[in-house]
Length: 209
Image (cartoon, rainbow, N blue to C red):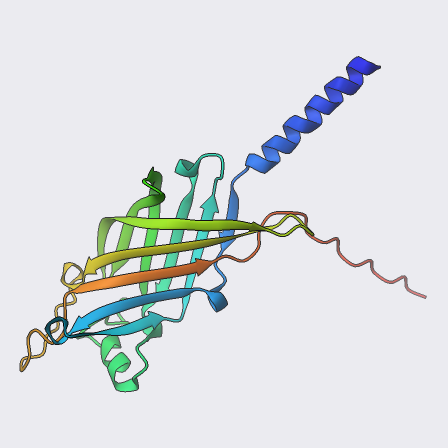
């Protein structure tokens, strides 16, 4: 009897370990996340900030082996917003993003590696119809666990710089060629929706009279 009980305990422990180690798929909570950018202007005298308001991000997080993690992002180019209507409408037209022809900006990782105190996602970034392999550095800010149901939430930040002309966005003002800078700083601040854990049981269907 003791032998059977011991084997049962080992089996339960192994099953629990397998569940814990399984990768978790997270969706971004856009209400508390931000996809922003910073553009230098006037030859670097100042900067203009903007953001995209319509985006989805899926993160597969493997806590046991981060190299098996992945990320996939889709940004709707028409959701660009810089706070000034005339400016962001201009950014949507053929001088810049050509949103009707190229409605999405995407990134899909191929591998993730540890680098220093953070990580790097290697993958394909596509913008304005141009695809390039890039390295996306990011920091995993932490994993928050809900003690009530065991679900977890991730916080992720990333910073990188892209040359807009590498993606065919070449506009410049004839009267001031250096007015708009080429090197665009990308800022990602992402928080996921809770995932994993024990989902609440459905409410029982009331009995019919």
